[in-house]
Length: 243
Length: 239
Image: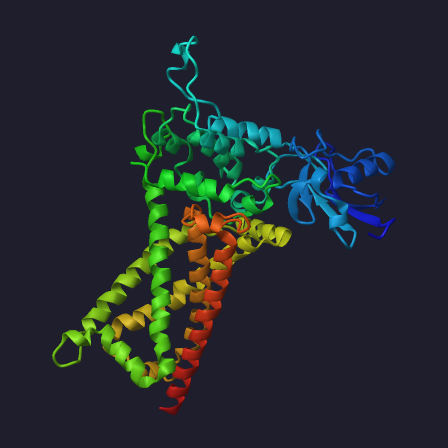
């Protein structure tokens, strides 16, 4: 690796809170350090160039999903993207499209994810939950199913799949992969007593699973490599045959 | 009207599910049909005699004592395909970008991500739009000319009826739309997701294999189609 590279960051600057502010691309130069991630570089810019730069982060380790943004055209997590990935040293950063813009690179994914959770009713539905006999052992789950559910629980709600979805970008009401994954998680869970008919009420239309055009952006840009395509196909098969 | 009301006591319409199935189903049949169709048309590459034999067989000549066959069989086959074509178009057009804004957003997303499967979908929209017109012309000509399919008459249509440019464009539209569509169908419904062979350690799922297969099939059918197109053009010019 050639040392002492100067990286050029082209970043979209726009604060919708400031009256009269216009979106512009600004360029910042950062000296590359070994093992540098986009997230580290952004901190450098904020510290040494412009303290007003807005971007989100919490965990710095690809677990919280806060720092997702468009990095040279692709939705990804800033904390997991090494600057060494870009040989020409030109890095263009944009906020995730499809979400409410807070400012610069910061978007309100939380608002979207909360609405998604409410829409798919992201909790265990069991009519008899109140009359559970607490003295009895809980029913055991097949390890296979537990593992499948755990696989889907790995989602960090970063929003990359939403921004990578051209269908969602064209049609704002589309549920998107993160919602399908969540629903598939509950459809797999034997503790959730919802019937296919009840799931159909949530995703059985063109804003739901039948609106998915299988562009597979969700699958290709998921930083956690979740199996979007197989899960959406699974939901589609289940929903298509509901009587 | 009541099917549009959202109310906990009123069940959501099952129609979107049925329409989705029908769109996929008609697409599957048409896609596979086009492969068979291309192979049959491609028989012209082996010579006029072979093509004429294939055309006569399609008219069920082996069932008639005179050997002339029944052109009505071709008429009905074309009618069925035309019907499927119209149904598939009607259902497919629901997915098109319907305003300048939607189109601009889609193009913008394509330019931003340069993501292959997103771009492939746009190719399908463009080729579908082309086929609305060119496909209809071809199907109508076939519907109104049953029993007049043989090497000479088809070649005559190529040149004297000026069908050659139409067929050239239609060939590209069909072969691209069909193979991309069949690949997308396999992804959409997850037909190969559970197949052991694709899911072994180093294979990583069916998708990349199907993508390669898709590309090869497109090249194969385009090559065969272009060759057949060339032969018909030459025969037509020499008539």
